[in-house]
Length: 153
Image (tube, rainbow, N blue to C red; front, side, top):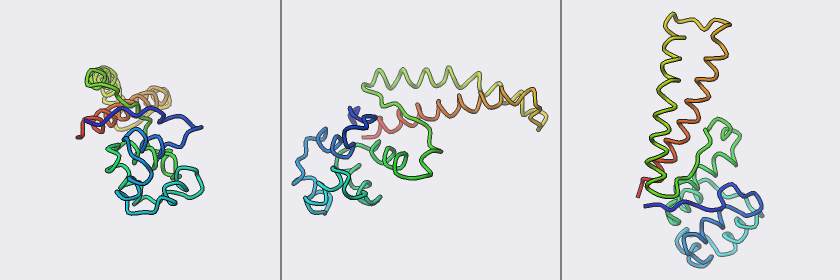
């Protein structure tokens, strides 16, 4: 089971380094697993060099941290702004609870969208409720993605 990752949202600490350390790896071992030099690892972790996507892919696998790939896209690409925020479950109970909360939030939003979209038109008086429902669905998507990512072994 993947671990919850401390430091994911900390801006003062390099997240690539945090993930490596949480995996219990030295820079030397990480460089061996990733097929890059120790100097490259150091440069990535000290924000001297942008980490290429293919290296992040290898990091996510080697560090057993699939959320690293998500974080990387969210924070290094202009397209990341389109991805929902995710909250890392810390335990299996937390994961189950997030799933229950997601369902509780999703049901009314879907019902609302069905009502709004039943005539195929979003009227001005429905626009606020429509956007609110879409925001709820976006938040639920983040919760569900975090649950799925956490559950992967």
